[in-house]
Image 1: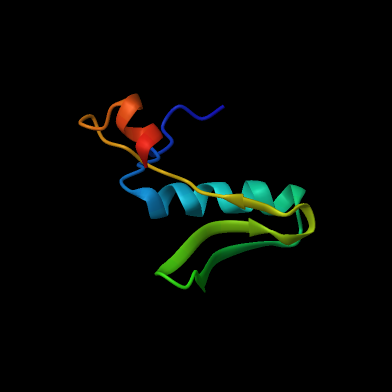
Image 2 (image 1 turned 30 degrees about the horizontal axis):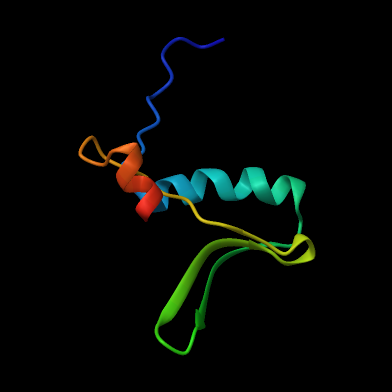
Length: 74
């Protein structure tokens, strides 16, 4: 195992999506990235959609100021 590998830096939600998508795609080959649809009131963006399983994966990246309680509201 190499000891001098560069540190993987996750700075925002898009970095999390880029890391998780290949993992999910390796299990669910029909997984797709960022689908947007009109709900009638506003546009809804879904991070990763797995149509065959009727699953939507919504990934969030929180900072120190975001508490667990605040995350549940989102």
